[in-house]
Length: 619
Image (cartoon, rainbow, N blue to C red; front, side):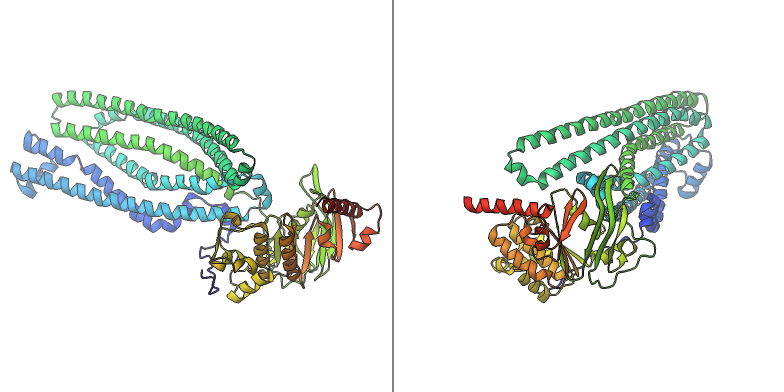
């Protein structure tokens, strides 16, 4: 995006509109759009299986028809003689050419299968990541308040990567192994049913071992994932608060805290790895027993019957190849366990219903005037701890009202209900007579601008952060908004002006500069309703005055709700509501409330007035 040209790119990623589809998502649903590629993959698998089945036959031909001349009967000998005759050199050449043809077939099919699985794996994980992230965006603030950010990051990254790894390395590989296994058993039964049954005698033991260990590995892998999520949460929390850590010299404490989480992760991982490490050797021992049985009984049978040496070699080759898919499947179980646990964790988020959905038939709001009404509103996160009790507030269009009161009294919760971040337990909230539960959330929030105490800017340019309020804003509108917010005072001093890059969360700017960028963002949005939560808290006198001037321009003609602790900022409010213990205890203008000698507002005013006087004398 070029800030000087005033163009703003919109996201091009498709939106996930159907919530029901996201909740009912399955692996088959994710694979369905790629079924054509998967059919080609199955064709490649068939070619791999044919190549695997054909691989030992050239050796059998050489042993039986060139070295020992004991294969001079049967359909294979007849086919060879019709093709190249009975000359040993010709038969040897045919066998060598067959080896090359089989190898070429296997190489082409293996490449095609790997390419297809990699491609499908990438697109499936892209679709899954997009669906999961869209669901994370839809989940309510109550869900995010109770969730660990690091754990959600782990689900969007590590858990999805484990699914991709399984699709790439395991999904079609299992099909290759199963098809090859079935084909080999069929050929072995045709060659010698008795020896085949001896070879298959160890299969029940193999599957019992694989099944038992797979369940134990899955349980251990689940614990590893949970612990990794907790560890990532610690890292994310500390890195996002690194200034606080350094300010209090708590680096050693945080290092020890991460070390503790890391040690628990190591212990869980070693436990899971110990189980995985036992599985493959156990399978190897059992398959060795099966091979020894076939070798013993097959050799005795060859000495007593007319079973050719080439058939014995073919049989032993197939036995080794038959056990290899079983060993591969046991190895893939590790990848499958991780993918299965990852998929479970992803489904926990996707199927979570803790979201504020638009009601059926919800309509878009028209352009609002800003008439806001709270009618007997009760709200709580848990029933035994009420946050708001019988709150009644009316805001006339185009006026400013203020919410004042002690910290934790419920002021911020009131404005959160207005934006429908939460729903009231009892009562209702209306704008211009519309119950906000009955309208589309997007149409409501698009007409509300926020200027908060903790100003959040995104990594990017100043232009990006101002345009975040309205991406389609023109160059002239962005500049005008910056001027109205008194932001040009410092923007013009930057080498790249609007193109200057701010750090993560805008920490390369001062508090006053960040706040003026936030005000410019609200100005360019030009919404009829404005919510401000302690917009001047923590600013120095000069920055505070610049912000006040910008706020005055921002509030002109808008319905404004201001949360403030400093009562000097709300003297001009049309109505001041005093919030205490979750209820409205007083309301009126500044002058009216000061006339009540025992009122809560006058007590707050007197405390601040005497504090300000004391500070002035001290200075």
